[in-house]
Image 1: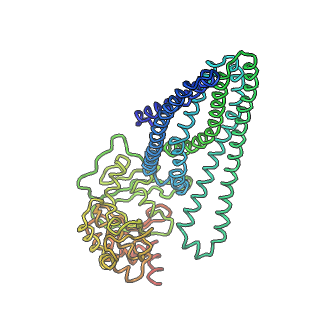
Image 2: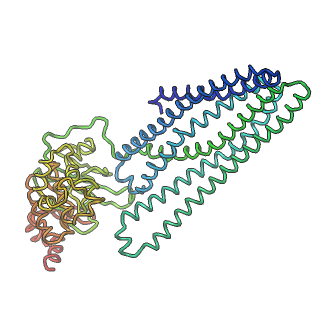
Image 3: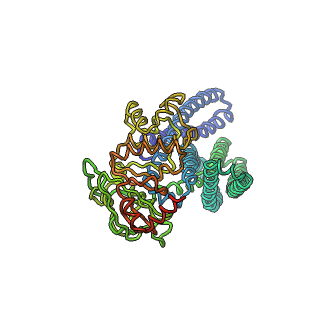
Length: 566
């Protein structure tokens, strides 16, 4: 809220004026009774009406200002907070998402920030307004009758006791309730994301039961929180208004005895009711504030999470123009979730600028890990990786990734237009450049048949396209990005013969201009690579051309015999 100090100050002024106007009504009530009704003075009643209307006008204007400014602050702060959390999450490495479910993060970005919006834009000012009314009421109580005020002050600690005791429990339960809600969101996200698998395996009854369990768990936690809040509010109201009854009895005896005027007793009761109502309102709002405190803790946890991969203080620049030379020097690496298992052991490999190098080997040999380290999603525990001769740790990760284009086995298509999907690596590209990239990727033949061509929305994850079409769009994205190092991860493994022919043709054109690393299980697709690196158990066991590796009669020759014989 700090950037909006002027608006906060204006809202505070409006708040004070509105609260002061309410308190002024009590003094007017005293004058009307003592000097008007009791004295039989109708002129005083007329003046009181005019004064009351003036106070009401001031109170209405101040309330408008307070409501508008505070609500604006709630919306503005929430928007800022969502942006800050989202921008911070984008900096976190994939290791964070290995241990954190996406639905959990989405819940914090939406539900938790909405709670804070309610507090900043409503509950906090409501609590502050009632706090001011309570303080003002106590001051005027003391001015009206010091003797009765002593009785009130004796009861205040008793009234606030339930707020203090129950408030802590409400905060804990609020945090737990938000955690359960996040679990519900995570389950929804996972189930809907994989809806085809759910329906293919007729898993709906299990998912209905699983979702029901999570919803009931969230409800049970919320029920406990509501129960504690209800007991707290009821206790405060009982104690506060019970105290008013006692005060009215004592004050009535003082009026009968002539120690207090009827107007003073009326004003005193008015202020006592005001103070009691304010205390009750604060008790009710405290529950909201405690819920927001729990939500804020969860958001601050996210903001306090340090990215495992961050730019060095003084990053070195990439060579210009970048050539795409890569080298691994005695690299050891284990994933954070499996620290005892090395994915790469003493791995050493050099790739020359412009070279086409294939990585082959059994599943789990460490091929994909090579790509993960090149993109600096992780850093190795030992050894060094260099890009164009510069250690990757010394580079800004954004600069390094900006020199690499990736074509994945399962291409990612976003729920936007064809053009925006192709532009992903170069948002400033013109439509003509996008079309040229699509033609180079042999994608234009199906794009021009789409209802709106490049402007056609593709739906979530590109479900309207076939696998071959999605893959060609992914290649068009890499063509348009035009980065010196190209990473191909099983780019044709899941395609039919016709789609594979088109995709392979597009890849051949793309590879002709870039340093390329290719992960392949089907050896027929990499026979023409400049070199083939054979991996097993995280180590480089063979390297050479297709013919050289066949002649060595090692692991590659055995894999080739199995595939080509079949």
